[in-house]
Length: 174
Image 1 (cartoon, one colour):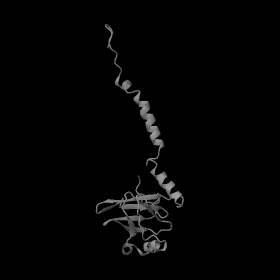
Image 2 (spheres, rainbow, N blue to C red):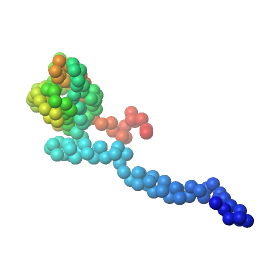
Image 3 (cartoon, helix red, strand yellow):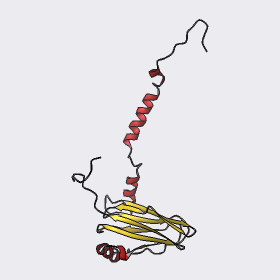
Image 4 (tube, rainbow, N blue to C red):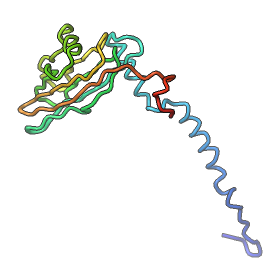
């Protein structure tokens, strides 16, 4: 609404959004101070420490569930480092088992799993039960596993290797 005889003053376009600029700068600054992964790496390290894994180790998660005759293991590929842990956790009320496929494992990997008593999980009988694979002193390689529950089977692999050396010429710059 304007008064008679007074012309309406229009601000230049750059002034109209001026109140938004400080907000955007502040939000960007705060966002830049947070971890880019939303804190998931810090959580994985804290959970690994709580399980007695070495400092700097991570705890990776594989959820087990299913419907009808279907069985699911998510994710089906986990990349881990020696010393890390892999938690298999049930998300439903079915009985699940995890077993590593002996004839698909390299001899060193099979020997490691057998000597540490980790070739297979006990039956995971209730929602939220878990089996933790500890990779302390684990040899690099592919750890193929099967998850079974109520007639269905899911497959996956845990790839254990050493993290790339950032100074290595084989690492592509980011």
